Amino acid sequence: MKEQVYGAEKGNGEKVASWLNEQAKDSDLKLQVKLKNSILSTQNFGDFDLLLLSDDSVKSRKLISKAGKRFGIKMIEGGYKEEARIIRRKKSDYAKVLNGDKVIGHLELETSRFGTKKWEIKSEERR
Image 1 (cartoon, rainbow, N blue to C red):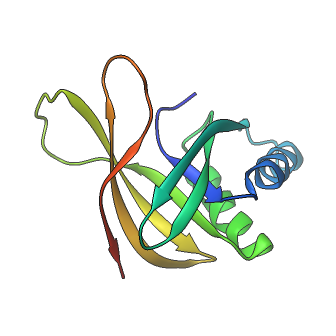
Image 2 (spheres, rainbow, N blue to C red; image 1 turned 90 degrees about the vertical axis):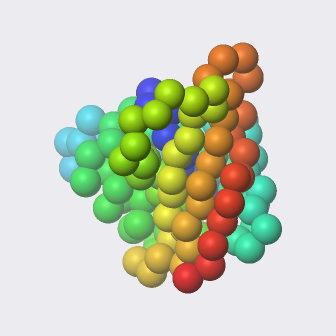
């Protein structure tokens, strides 16, 4: 599974994961979504159940947006990397916060390269 941040508004992770798996199966997309036993808390956007995706294609990202629209919830779509190739002690990821098709904010996340792999918010901005 990819080490990128995807999430559904807290309390909706299980139904979003099962719906995404159904949609992937129906469209013959090689995508498997699992609910990670972790919650990401943001100051501006609330709490999110984290998801693990086995595929990071454009179709998968479109399904994430569709899920937010279908259930009327906020979603996190991660995997936006920084351009600089600097070796750091912490691994970072950049994500969009979606409300349906609309981008309502951006997140910068960090986790340790070694040991526990719990994502933490480094910075966030509303749009």
